[in-house]
Image (cartoon, rainbow, N blue to C red; front, side, top):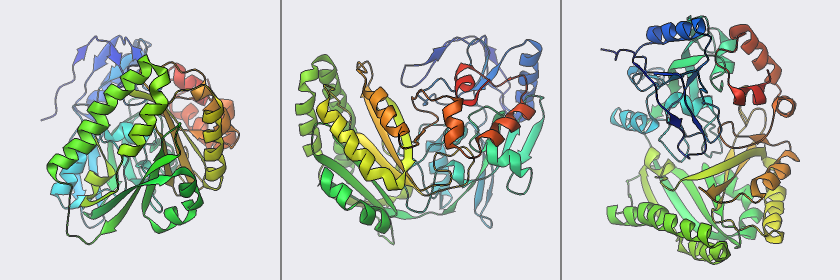
Length: 440
């Protein structure tokens, strides 16, 4: 039985702790129909409505302000597994970590995913969450259909053949068109991945980048500022047998060292910035050469317990070497002390209207700061560099771009905002952040 809608007043804070709001009401609808009633009730009261999942976006994209905050935690059912057509239909609030285990139990898998799995399905897809892949794109690109409740309380279903215009906009819709209640995702038979992690020099990575991204299904790397060292990761499908990391080794390297020890190192670096280059040198040497084979989602994802803020830009793949060399030069000539590595991933072009990879092969470059660390111009300078290359900011990560800029880098931007005008003329699903990035 679906859980009944409840209403309470509370304060909301995101995962990173850099965004918060005090909504007038928090609701947890158990069905699309209950949600529709809450949206109409909010309209009668002149309040906005925003849905928020795990709060893993670093921007205020999900902030309800003093409106109504929708928690999707009662919308977590698996509605259908269609093996013949290779799809699964799940409700919007299902966390990715539960989806991965449900799929695994059914002998199925997503084709690609990001490196964390704490987000809700709708939250991840609506903000453009992605992993790295030569042939496979973001989670939104894997959507085959969805159900959404609009500002007038209507419940609409859409797909490439049913209301395709709404489908193309809503599968990465920023929460601006309505509240998604269910999604149909493409899936495939479960598969194994072999991961090969290897330290490599910065210049060597860039010299070999074309080959590394061409021969590997999933390639990514981390560069440690203040050093010339990178940690590379190559994930490729395997016929098996599975050869996972021993349990103790996995805990030691992927949890204790990568989270507990790293948290302590970041705290030291925040308190004593002069120690950061030495910490970076030690950290870069701690990443060893290792290989293992395991279920796909266990290789794609890893625990992320150290809290940070993040900016990520998508720039044309052809500009990867130039941008990364200039980023390194910027760090070297600055007085910044950057404790977090720079993360670099790749994606093929897709046709999702507001996808950061829309119409072009893409390299993603992400920069981070440990929570509470002074920004000192790092993000500002990185953003300037990225926009010089027509970069597109990740929708859920920090940036200062506005609708005028974004309209110039997204060919379908005007079509998206026109549809928004039709579906939500009163901006029931608006907030200050969406006014900036989509316009008034």
